[in-house]
Length: 377
Ligand code: SF4
Image 1 (cartoon, protein in one colour):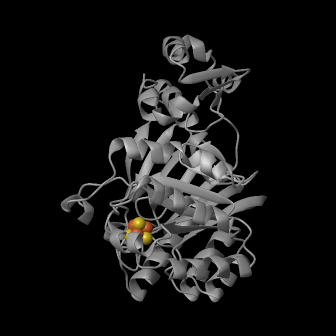
Image 2 (tube, helix red, strand yellow):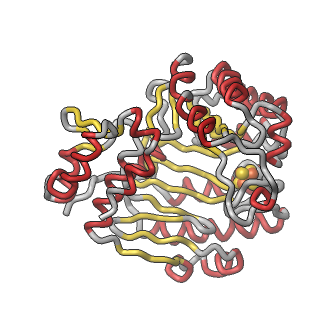
């Protein structure tokens, strides 16, 4: 069975935040400078070990977290140097770092530029201070604007802003106003996710005044239309970009390109094997130099698993999946495997087939979870 030939995607996890936001269940938390240093050294040991076995050029890097803009310049420089020394990069590699307002400085931005970082994803969530406070964010809108302008002044011409909707107390009108405020700034990319109340977070223990389902549905439904007025197109369920500014790294996930996740709890897919690094910091610090010892949950995907992933990840993107690619990967026609499901959703107007592609219709996107679940074999 063939797979799409491609360079490599790297994800680097930086698990530090100034303080936990009240809705967050990501693997991250406050840290000391000494803790950051030992973690970055451990990450460098993992980088050295895995890069010895990896000859492909790196097409995209995503430094995520946590808040990768927390570590000071000297600590971060060691990591960025290590990356450059150990991997070979494609000439047009997309290298993204996530940053939070209140942690960026001109010095950090200059350092990122020096090491080839060419995209910044800024976690704003809301341009209203009362909403930011309620979410437990560390920053206000003014600090975000400072960070945004600082990034522009440092020469970054590819910026994403993360926004959140369906947050407690938010009305439909309030959300649309947030969207417009941010779109008017003109970032190249906007990600818009609804709040999910995760078990174990402070939000899960609080009585929250959440918008009802109908309002949440309308909030989502109108994002594409509103952002369309500002020159953005939706290219994935939660992602909107100006022309040619789609996030290539994330597109790689949805196209099932190989990626290596480095750092605490980071997940990887190589060939038909998925695995995840340990989420135990002590274990990571001790074993990162011998990655085999700290990788968990190794899963060998069967052809059926791969077909299902091909479909439900591919259908996240508005241009969906290619029938020819399916045939090339799996040596069989997509209709032969999924004929019934495809017919059912085409009849219901949820899926569209046009030329070589199968994709979700506008209605299909709005109920995408239900449609995708049907592709599990
Ligand atoms: S900044 Fe992001 S990763 Fe950190 S606690 Fe908040 S939501 Fe979680």
